[in-house]
Amino acid sequence: MKRLKTGWIGIGLLALILGGQAMANDEITREALERQTDRLQAELRNLRKQVAQLSGAANVERPEGLNKGSRSGQATQADLDRAMEQVWQDLADLALAIYGLTPREPLEKPQKVHRKQVSASGTAYRIRVTEKVRNRTVSLANRGREVVVNPRLIVNGKRNWFSTASILEEALAPGMSDRENAVAIWQFLKDNRYHDSPAHTDVEVHDPVRFMNVYGYGFCDDSATNFMVLAEAAGLKARVWGLSGHVVPEAYFDGGWHMLDPDGEIYYLDDDGESISSVKTLEQRPDIIRKYPSPYYTDAEKLIEIYSTTEDNRIADWYRRSSESVHTMGFVLRPGESLLRSWDNWGLYFADRYLEAPRQYGNGRFRFEPVFEDSLFRKGAKSVRGVQVKEGVLVAAQGRKGVLVYPFQSPYPVLGGKIDVVGDVQGKGGIEVTFSENGEDWQTVWKVDEPGAVKAGIPMGGYFRNGYGRPVYAYFLRVSLSGAASVRKLVFESDVQVAPHSLPTLEEGENTVRYVDESKGERQVGVTFAYDGMP
Image 1 (cartoon, rainbow, N blue to C red):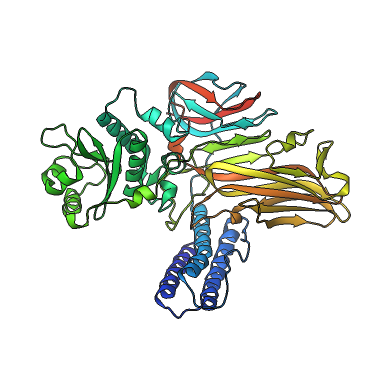
Image 2 (image 1 turned 135 degrees about the horizontal axis):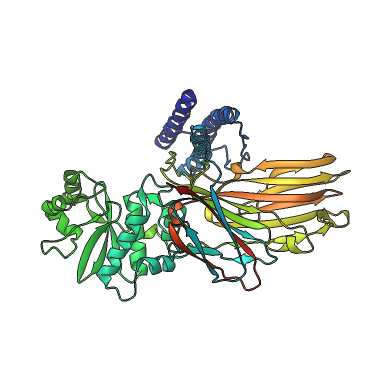
């Protein structure tokens, strides 16, 4: 294990060195760049295979040629970026694989399970817990015949973080002053995130809904930017300061600017003991920083140096340009589809250049098993052409080629998955599964055209971006049948990353659970909480 990890770090350094050489040497050709990155990718693939052999897991090969450009001419920065994407992807895959081999205490089955079936939006019920709780998983399953739109659970009135507006509804109270709103937003971020290497270095973690529900961790600039976005959504003027070694936000109220640092878990008070200090005040008043120690940044003298070196303190407009407030936690559950979210994880996290696992994160899984009954399998499909269900089996109509396309969209980034196919191929028939991120460009994931029974488990990890760019939130899978091929069972699984602190949490005592959705038709939704009692 130690030798493998050393090899992985060495490959990472080689990749960085290659990047520096390519940018520094104006004479490097596209052909030379491709040759070097191909060599690095081959080494990484070999290491991944070793890890797969040690772990017993399937080694998922990625489609070849996705990032290939012209081999002629002088290499440009765009050529370097394209070539390095696959290297970073392979590095991320290897980091996840090595993390998966790290010995961890195995999780036993949850001690207690509470199940409820609801049939109306707004349904509320109670779960009484007589001891301290370790929450394990929470699940929503569509057991009805209609598509369920935007289902969510709210426990004890907390963590309804569906949108920026609903976050503010929880963080703020009617009638608050501007100062009280700013402090409440600071408190909300301080309490619901932690400092760790961010999953991304740009807009991905600068939307409050993604930041709180998907990740829950980041650097000082991520907390500062999300403070600015939330403050502005609440009607305040806000901005972000870039200091030398730290990033902090300010909000405007009571006739001036005031600094509230959620990452440092601190704000400072002027001499009157009431007014919140501004960056400009802290530049000139080191005694204030000494008077109010930061719980996180405990070196007061270092903070004083950061604030007092005013030549590199500037209002950083880049953070506004790299932020947004558009994400929601909306999704649908088709008949036969469920979402399980876990406070624990099984080793899947998004890592844009920061490959180490975050200290705390969770995973979840969408599971969709189309119901092969009359027209139920059509619900939630993007297109259905030339297929039909006969006696619970999916077949091509009248021997023609049939195509079934399902879209998959998640409010959480998709990082892995699996497809299970059970069926049969006769004569010259065949079954093929293809993948697309945009619904237009398709890549073959798996196919079979030899006669006989079919029972396949197809890993999908190789098709979801990691290590560079932004993660995948939506994709399409196309199942094609030809000849006398048939499918009796089809299961799609999408593994996602979730922030445990955002999940509907049971507490000791009486818990009120409220189920909400935006469906118009009838619904039958199964709700399951799994948890352990703690002494």
